[in-house]
Picture: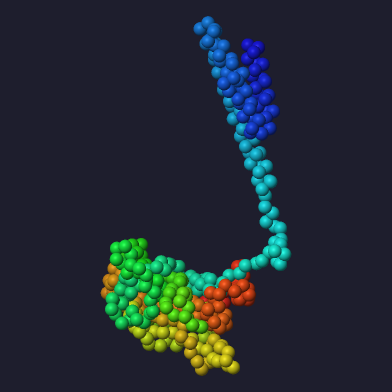
Length: 370
Ligand code: PHE
């Protein structure tokens, strides 16, 4: 009996005395381990008479339970305080001022193309468009055929295409020549088809990279476009016009920016229009806004019924508009960047001059959002 209470108080004292999880584990081993004090008591049971064994055994079991409970409780306390210690030691003081620039610390900046994509996204986002994307390496069907440009159609020569080796199944592959294949990919998606069938609408913009064999001061073999697509049962040419007028005025931050919708041709839209913005040239310098010149910035039109049909929708029910705009071009115009190639030179002096602060959010001060 004495043995029992001595072992018990020694064990419980040791549990309390343990100040970290390692020490506590050592206590557990010393009491409940193979050679532990309580385990030792268990071993004496074998030599006892049945009556005595039952009585003593019950007491040893009770003791074991108490020690286990004490160990568990202490473990909880120690883990909580271990966590608190760790949190305190790993604390980051977010109120510390950043180190001054220059002393080995350089502040990065956003590339004007990324900035312009964000601006375009913010303006169209305000109009209810969501952001969609598709692959740069595209199959011939999505890039051309779905868009009403069948094989051998002369319109294939409108775009100087980078052809890639065909896929294993023989599918001809290209680097996408425009972001328009994402129109087809989106209309074909089950989600979109279900949403449209439920009476909903589709409004997306697709900013991304595009590729054509072309290279001079205003053309690069890789460039950026943003596609827009609206499909529902009622959208008409008036909506196209209103949407693009609002966008251009917001983007260039000129409330009365003149726009000209010029009849044009694209195989995937009918009717089609190219859009010019007003500008003037003074002493060789370009100024966007009212003036006597025009600059073309985008192509647009009502989605051709064949495209709608190729994408699994009934053109007797669904209609809408699409547009495609050169991001690099509108970035050059807005921020006065004379040579397109400088976008891709990675010249640090240029990037520091034309880059944007990461903290500067796109402005909506033009026509929308006020
Ligand atoms: N994909 C056309 C181009 O790259 C632009 C466009 C898009 C025209 C959508 C009309 C509709 O030139």
